Image (cartoon, rainbow, N blue to C red):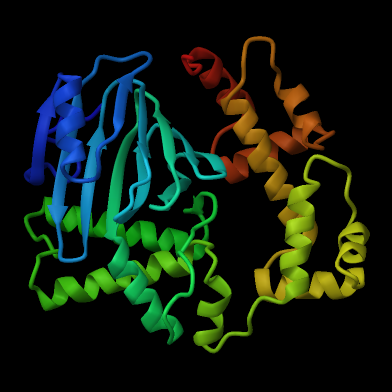
Length: 335
């Protein structure tokens, strides 16, 4: 694990402590009051680095030990959490997923949050003022949002827009580490960069204004049949489904559904379903208990050919399913 002096944003350190109560209090002064408990392996060794801008801030946090973090509702800010090592289990409202170097977490401030960070988890966090992000969204869609902006699930950092947002964040961190921080209150450049970050997040991650944002940019809105087909497949992700089933569920033809997915999602309906099943299998592997097997979990989510499952899993997550299972069994959550 990186020492505080060599960690991201080291020149902007707020604290480094082995005292859990101090860490809880100091982190709360930036974000919000929360529960923080050491629940597993690792020596508690907390660091928080903080670079303040005008409408957002860049942060780096590590705890050294497996920790349970339960802030409830953040209320005043959206929080993008991007692990640079390790992983975290996230529950934000009804959403539950694992965040790692390929998937960032975006915490909605109006939904209660509970997290478990493993002992190797180190994260770069982008804290965005809630009112500022809503005002920025209003400018992009040319109208005041009529409901709370709500992001859905993990942010795919391997997608083109997700990768671009990650690269920009890491660039800003690197510039700050080189003594050239771009985020400074009152700076015109800093304000422009903040706007770019907010636009990047709104474009990279799915939320309940995605269609309105696409329409305002002159792109065709996502057709209802695509949204309905996605909802149908996600609701039946654990059942055998053919493309004809999805087409029938939305009152269309299989060919029409394929063309719509190609045009508006740059994928196919069955590839969408496969990725959803891969996400479920990955979550089960990470939550595995002694006695669980890769074959059992793969079969549970419709992957009958183990070799093919291992290949597409590695292509998506960067490691084999067996490695994920072994890590989970060696480092299972403490109840």
